[in-house]
Figure 1 (tube, one colour):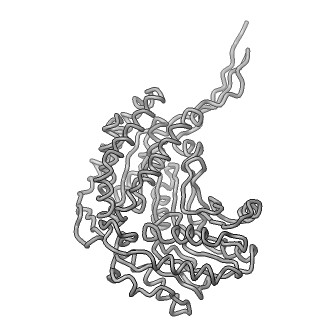
Figure 2: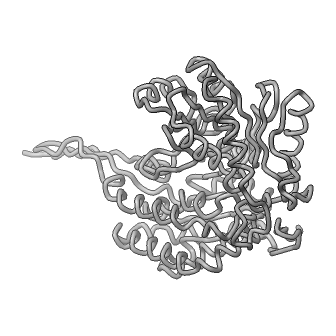
Figure 3: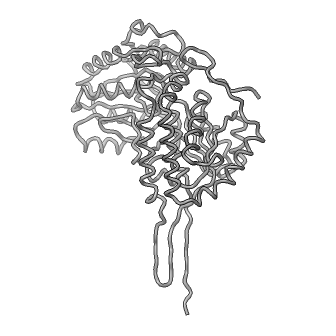
Length: 461
């Protein structure tokens, strides 16, 4: 066993190092969580909600430290202030709907029978969280899981080791017992062994398709429920009636924000041929106005990618596309901070087609390809020509048209005139290689609870 090291993309230094738990120690953490869970579930729902929200407040009190740590860990510029707006919005919404989402569903309550459906916690929920939005993605499951009465074990990505520690610090300060919420550092072998041993009632994983396959293999035969949010290649479509400036601002921000490292970031854009030239011109100008640099500088709008190896994937996709005939429209010389490593200049590609990896495989970086289309039918065909299905963004003045297009798209969420957003009132889900499961909304509570049926017959003389 060797330590897990967090290499900062800011300067390539070793920012943090932690030793993973040995298998026996990991099993002991799970055992304590299982033993503590019934007592937590026995607390009134209102008490659990109060303690979870107190933990969120304690996290917000750490804002200054957290924002700087995020810059060092995964490169997000400090100017954006972390993820606190989304954290509060999602936590408040899930707390607000908890009573209704978890309430028994009455079927009959009469003289002879009482029948109802109840929901009870699954026990111990295992959250395997990613580095790109390390607080939001983890809390998407942690908040409803705790509120529903589960214990939670969190394993965070090695690139954001300190996030798990901050979450534990905050939730414990809010009154969630230490054994009810445990942050652990694990290697892959121990992680897979715990899942295979049926240690958990539910496993939530956000990450790569390969990682999702590893989780499914580990869970095979254990009948453990899994929620898997995997890759994405989310498209945007600009119809002929779209507000051009709004479409450029929205889609380019969706493509480039967080250096393109967004689960539902825009990775390919299809523009009606009547708007194509104008859209491309404005999109290039939008990108050229960005500033790539040290994320600790308040003037920086684009920090480094989280790791040099992630940037290498994007560089390779761009180079392959250009070799196949694509045209790059952004001169990398405009971004002198591009060092050939984690710092990567953003790029807009035209002359692309679906034979190129950059238009079909996940890039997860600051590059977007733009293609002209003749109308809705061609756009729909190209938007569906992908192994992923997380979100799709349609820019139009016609709501009915957006709905009609959305009905034909293979995706989890349909946006009109916005993108790259998780609405906590709606189900966060996907299809195809994006995975399966449901987070947010009342359906998010169903993922971390199980149904129990009550059929009560009253015997009368």
